[in-house]
Length: 562
Image (cartoon, rainbow, N blue to C red):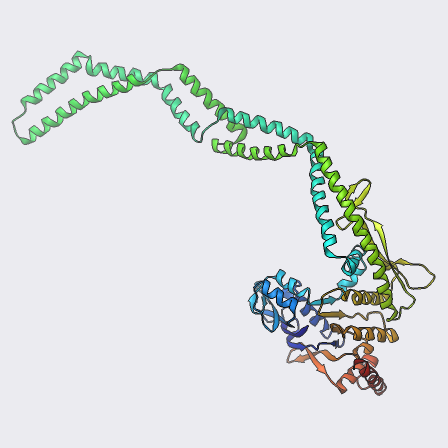
């Protein structure tokens, strides 16, 4: 059960703690006093969206902390998920203005999904969103399934449905895009063969360009080197001059060390010139002026440039493109399956879906009878003795079509609630015929019935008495008191008949502390409870007649609570 709720700087609740009893807790107060703040805090402790506007003006963060008593399901979850196992479970949400919100479970950091998972089996929160769910027929099947459908039955159907959905989707996509896919297959095959036929290597184009430059200059190189060779080796005037220079240099030896050094240096240069001439000749002798090879290199370079113009700015990009389309080609070729074989797979899976759907529908129709009887029994106790409740099934109009029947994600049938509130006038859709007060009572009946099928510790009702009053409100109060024997109840109410039944009564009010408005919640006892009930009856806690009625209500309800 929810033992304690603490709010700090949450909206206008600066520092509020509520300690709930195990049974029937009621919360009352003037409209706008802050009762909804308590509900919002509980919702946030259950993992609802946190908004920075929840932070009290002037504060950096808001804190909500909920303490739950331990029970086996909770203890098992804590152990499986590695959280400290203590005598209680404390969940904590911190909402910060800087957006760095935190979640804690028993002091350890947790995720929001873990918070939702742990609290969804602890508290059933009934608020305006559930009224809206009830008014949307698409949710009616969820209510019914929660009441009487084993989860594994629906899971088995949905598993086959998902498989058939993806199989059909792929098949329909291929049929629709077959021409385009085959065109892409042909195109990709051609492009890959074109690239593979040339098989360019990274950097090859640059190497070929350098080779072309050398080949194109080969003739000029050979002409110049031949002239140099002839000049150095075959020109009598030049060679005679070199010999004359060498002879005169030899005659300069012996004059001194400096002169000898100069003579040696000049001889070295003359000898080096001869060696360089011979090396140059060897280089030229190794060159071939091959016009055919030059043409071949130019052709390959041209082919590479064509590939680059079509598939990328560089050889690396061309090869990357080839790798990408190769993967796409593999995927497309996988789609070119045998249509007949694929249709047979769909046929087999479709028959399995039909079989599972039939079993699913049979279970739901049987559950619907029990569900309707249970709802009617609950409604008898809250002033709707003559009402008749019915679950009607209609075929879904969206989903997968198989053998002229449509199957949706939850089956081939959808459910809608019908109700007859005036005997003899016939049943009508709940969403069109129920008044506000009737809708509140029907939802209460639904929650009472479904609660017996849920492993829930605590049920919270936010103004379940909306649209009712008088004797009907008293009936609803008695039903709530009955539920409190099985569950912890936290009920926000404006009805004195319901408030009088509470085992613990919280009064919420706004007070002005200095220049700030704050919400306060306190536990009422004895005379304070009577005055609050009198206020709810007449608008004044001092109205003597209302006080007398409040005392009688309290005396009448005490034996019931006992």
